[in-house]
Length: 401
Image 1 (spheres, one colour):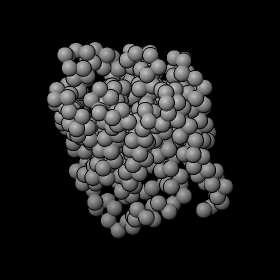
Image 2 (cartoon, rainbow, N blue to C red; image 1 turned 135 degrees about the vertical axis):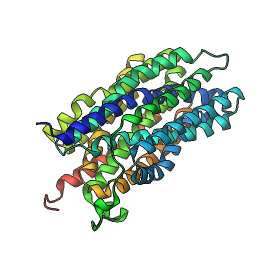
Image 3 (cartoon, rainbow, N blue to C red; image 1 turned 60 degrees about the vertical axis):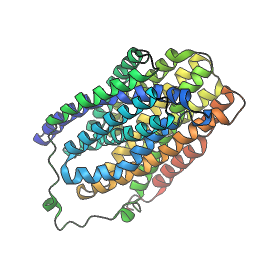
Image 4 (spheres, rainbow, N blue to C red; image 1 turned 90 degrees about the vertical axis):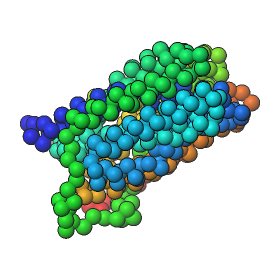
């Protein structure tokens, strides 16, 4: 039975799904072509993926300030700031392409990270007004909006990548327009500014105390590993595909398939979590991520790329949405803003390191494209062991703890 609370939550979910689809389209566009743009300007091939790394670094650096801003001014203000950051970043990157400046391409990418950070809070905003029963589904529905972005982004990217004389310039100009028009949607978001009096007298745990909570720690570890490994492999994929002679078009199609796989399961992930439990879903996600690495290492045929990236997307979905659900259910409302910012700081810190490592592993760790691609995928193993071990540790703890 739907409550009034869930009616409001469903309205917000609809707005956030639209934002994920339209504003979120810029991420597959930039992640598909940003590394190739970097490769065209970088003087050292090891730094080809640095523009992608700068996006993630910008996201990490702004996660905590954005979380604090949303606590003070509300979700709407934070999301508009994110869109403005995305527009500014794309404009600076476009200037860098015009001037053949790798520095400005990277600087613009840093500001693009402001949008990426704000987008990360869409899933938390979906849970703000949702009941305990509806919360996993609300998070899943918003993540499913990425399915539309996986269609819109690559199609828009394909239409604009060679639209200008300067390669890739059309991509970044289109992203500017997406951000400026897309932010209008947040007018319809109905999430009130948190009332400080609501939590008057409520003793909220400090960040240190929160990170001593077993379920919080495990949720953060699995979220960080799932996102970092997905980014590690996805960032190198266009370089590997083009390096193996399949062309930019094939790279775009493979990344599209990957992003579709990231978000398509979201229609059922919430139901699966409610049916089988969040821990089992997170564990399944890690197993699928391991399978993605195995398929990628097995060969560099086009079908290997497709299969590996599809598995990578599904594994990320189960691992990341599962971890988000576990986290939101493990903190009190008065602690959410503090913990969400800390969570994204840690998650995107890991993703930044993975992204920085991706280009080096791909271009500088072997004598061939195939050797670099194998190195990227083999690097997944220790982190999968870490996340799997954390889940086993949690499962073995006494239930009353």
